Image 1 (cartoon, rainbow, N blue to C red):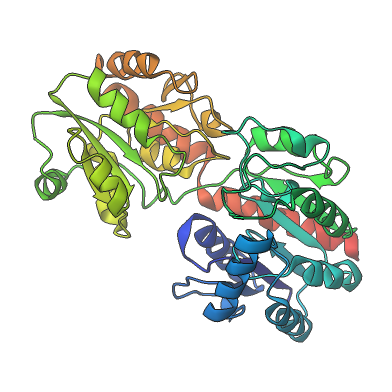
Image 2: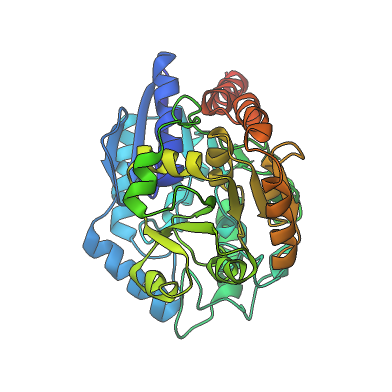
Length: 408
């Protein structure tokens, strides 16, 4: 029985944690054994779980990052224990997801992986893997990662360093250790990232692009949405423009505030995923603000209630909220940011220039000139045909089998 070990910051929690869970369930359905090692935040899982480190270790790692820009270079004992766990279960394939987040020492892990002869698949949910510091470089319009990072313009962004800028050293260390694995397959989740990856120090490694997928049996148009309008006081006679994010940092909250001033007052703008500070920020703007909800039925109802989904993200690899909205029958308008446009067609929405609010207004009003039903079937079919999670997870399973066949 083949064994799969996935390593991620979370287990069955958040977008990439749920992706790992879905992959684990698929391989189990095909007779494999599935393990997930995680740093923090876990929901019950069908896979065998291993918790890396502790809350104290995470705090010390975070402090080392803030003071010395040592992200990924702490957590030595936790990582040595992880290596012992790997040796114990002896996986046939190791699948990495997000290994940043204050829980792994990557030199220790990669020293082991480079000598273990275990094939490694690495899904890149952001850009941290090939930069000297940041997880995204779009907003800063920085392309130092193509040649060599240093004098980082984003040292105070995640993973934040207050004092030191070690981006030159960190780039050197990442290049050294990440390229040390001979049997490494990188999986960018968008065509945009695939092209950037081919300009990075990974350009000579195996790169296979696989899109993220969603549960199209779960995310689908919902007719009974009156309860969601009642709960959040959304007027029944108003058209709804919706925005959703798990974290609104550089995701366009200010753009929604600007949008509000351009749109007619009889349109409702609803923004989901706000923290307390952000709720205060929009208090007098006329926007309906909602905190992050783990209630997926509420989220589906909000997507289904919306007439247009607006995603003004300034940094993104491949946002699944676009997919969720369209799966619920709602046309989507998004900026030309990273891989965000890749899920949009002219029958399911519009792609507009970054930060162009007047164009956003024009696009939203153009969509609203037609009944939502003119878009619904196209949106639902597009996601079902191209971004169904079962099909996307199957691509990983096919990749695993090809890798194991070469190993024999």
